[in-house]
Image 1 (cartoon, rainbow, N blue to C red):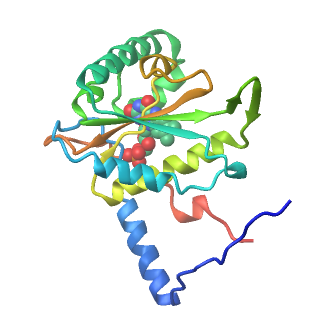
Image 2 (cartoon, rainbow, N blue to C red):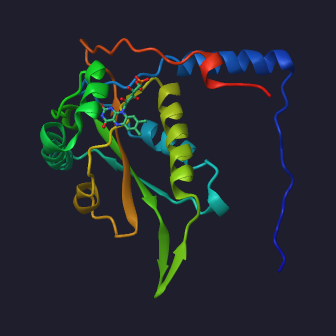
Length: 219
Ligand SMILES: Cc1cc2nc3c(=O)[nH]c(=O)nc-3n(C[C@H](O)[C@H](O)[C@H](O)COP(=O)(O)O)c2cc1C
């Protein structure tokens, strides 16, 4: 079989340029925080579309691009999502989570209240697509979790680059998102990401990132 190839165009930088760009990007990304209190300030959906377009450039197993990004802006649907999420989260915080998990969450100050699901102007719901249905045939996707995780990382970086704030949220279990958003059975909710601007009084937990020596090694 004949497969087409084309020339690869590459932007080559000097060492100094590379380092400057790298350090600037690191500095910008180090300002990203998970924010749990949002302002209701609205903005053009084009920003969200641009970030998702960027996420869609991600590599994926056999280029299957096993993701779907649903933008929720409808206040009614946001309310429905909040109600369903809080129901699950209340159950989790009060009954399902072991004490060790609650202890790990304590420094973050989280609980089952998820007001941000209504105040944030947009929610992005990321779905992973494990397989495609073509007639009776099921076409399997490869390395779906890895692929969708990489695409979501690019999404969060793109949003950060535009000066927007996010929360990586995983109400558990979150199958209710598939139902509320009317997605087919091969699309499984992966993450729920409110996006917007911080509330005036927004605070963040004073937690630390690991130092370079703890996360990398050269052999
Ligand atoms: C896969 C994943 C799931 C998460 N789920 C939640 C969540 O359900 N609720 C929440 O408040 N934060 C959630 N977080 C945010 C983490 O608590 C946060 O990333 C961590 O505390 C580090 O803080 P930072 O994002 O401000 O650097 C999640 C993060 C990841 C990567």
